[in-house]
Every structure is written in structure tokens, then in C-alpha cells.
Image (cartoon, rainbow, N blue to C red; front, side, top):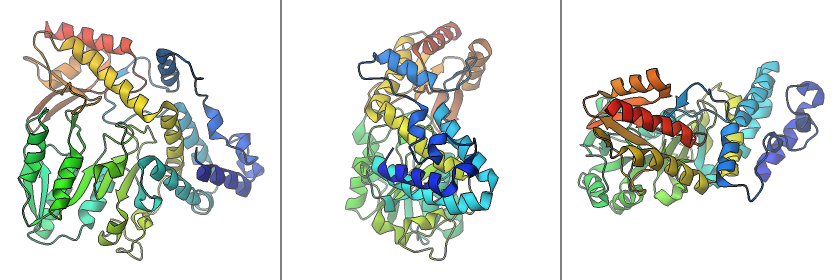
Length: 427
């Protein structure tokens, strides 16, 4: 927990007072100490690797009756995040307009500073959003494009993003230059060339999905971004599946705009996200929900959302603390190990095909598997009906299979059941 957020929590406790808090928050909050650090204890140095991950698993409240391997959709929150949300939610309900706008609204600045430190950028480049779609829409609808301007994107991008670009095409007459990727791919030159070959003197922006959510394909964003910038083309990155998963900083990508959902790999409350806009680009973008200065140069213009869940925003801080307690690199390494564990065991089974790369440069935790003679929906139903394994079927633009996405709380025993189930269904 950063000094900024500690200071805010102390001020919060002082301004509200112990009487107003009652039993709703931890007593330490009212006394001005640091409450949320005390809600979970980090295993001491020297703890064995599996003991450490057992601690992580015990920090969640997930159902023991379902093996959830669809974390690519949305992640459950650790108990400490749920508790933080509930405390602030109960506080808001004591006097909503007072606590939300006069007290908790101030906490966004401390949170912004923490997220910026983690993301490796300036606080003035980070806006709190509700999901990747909202953050991407802010960029898509906010860019000052005119008829004939070109945007490069792929058919494998996320549907909400594609639909937003199609609306701009219909409404404003921009031109969408489509790429149809053949995936999985371990050919970086092919991936880079697929985008760059579409660039012309009319191209204004390239839309890059950092990890293609359907299949787990990692796109070489930095190389494509450099090629774009060399031609005066801006770069927007959909990082829904990379922020708090891959160990990187946003400026590493050399992008102008970056959007992500914090309720995925950061394990923050549902409906929380982040938008990064390079500082010198802020004044060029119209806010999706405008304040008095829609072309102002202050990042907070992108947060004029009206009433929202302040409890969700405040609990983002606890999810960041929990993530840092694990460690970015250790988390990424663990998730890669989980994916490798099950894919390496089933790849030789007759009728089973892994549709995701085994090369760590091109994939991380998301894996796609297909079974000969079975539609994705049939495999999804079989896994759940017979083994209570929850996955999701994918059938989208050259990609077909069952997406399997473990989480930090997934253990190897759960994946052994997946291996057994795939062996059974393959015959």
C-alpha cells in the first residue's frame, strides 16, 4: 500500500469519525492506522512454493463444487477485496451523497497514483473506468477522425471493439482495413507484416489486441507500434488480457492509448477498469461522457460518469495490494506453468489438438483445445455435466475450440481432472 493511499485512509478515518463508522469498518480505520494491510498475512520468506500457492488458494471464496477454468471471462475476487468492497458499500449507504461525493471521491487520486506507479506511467495519464469496453469506446469515439481516414484492425479483435469501429465507419465514413489472422502463430514476421502491410498514407490508427482473447495469442505490440509511429500512425492497445497478467509496464508497449479491465487478472471488483492516454494526447480526444472541457488536457475529463460504485473503485486498491503480495513475475510464471501442465499431458492424445502456442513468447495462461468430431459446445457440456469443469466454447473467425483459463487459485489436482476428462471424451 503506497504512502498516498495510507494518507488517504488515515484522513478518511479522521474525517468520518469512529461514531459514524460504528462496526462497519475495522476499528483501526477510525483510529487512523492502516486497516487493509491487516486483512491478510503474507507467508514468511522461505515458504515452499506449493505452500505459498495454497495460501493464495485459501484467500479466495470460490465454490468447491465447480472447477472454474473460465477466468478469461471475469475473475473472482480474493476475500480481502470482497470485504473492502462491502465495508465501503455499507458506508455509502449510511448517507450516499455525503460519503460518496465528499469523502470517497477524494480516494480516487490516491488510487490513481498507485495504479500509475504499477503501470509505469504518470498519474495524469490514468483514468479509472468500468471495463475495457468503456475505455476503448472512449478512444474510438473520442478520436477526431474524418471521412476517408483509415483504421487497421483484425477480425479476431473483441466484438465490442469491432462494433464500435463499425459504428464510426457508418456514422463518419472512416475506412476500416481488415486483417484476418491465421492463428496460432509463432512467426513474428508474419504477425508484424499482417498489420504493417495495411498501412497507407491515410492510416490514422492501428487497433492492437495485446492477447487475442479467443485463443491466447500474444501479439508483438511493440514492433507493430514502432512501425506505426515511424509512419505517423497512432496506436491503441486493448490490454484486457495482459494487465496484471504479463509482467510489463504500459510505456514498454510504445502505445498512445491502452485499455484494460481490472476485474480480470487484477481480480478487482466486477465493473472496474483503466484507461491510459499518453499525456500529450489527452487534449486530442473527446471525452465519452464530457465535462465542461471535452478537449481539455486533464485526464479526469474521462471520469465524468455521474453516479458510479465508489465501493468498487476503493476496493481496486486492495486488489492491487493482493497482486503485489504475490508479485507480478511470480504470478505470470505460475499461470504459465498451469497452462503448460495440462496442455503437455493432452497434446499427444488421439483426436486432441492444442490450438494455442507452446512458445512463451506467443502465449501465457489461456489455452484452446479441440476434439475431433466434437463441436466446442458439446465439449463444454461434457466437461461440466460429467466433471463440473466450467469452460467456454469458442467459434469465431478461423478459431474453434474450448478455451481453458486457470487462475492463481487453480491447483494441479483440478487440472488432473481436466486431463482425465479430455482423455475420456477423446476415446
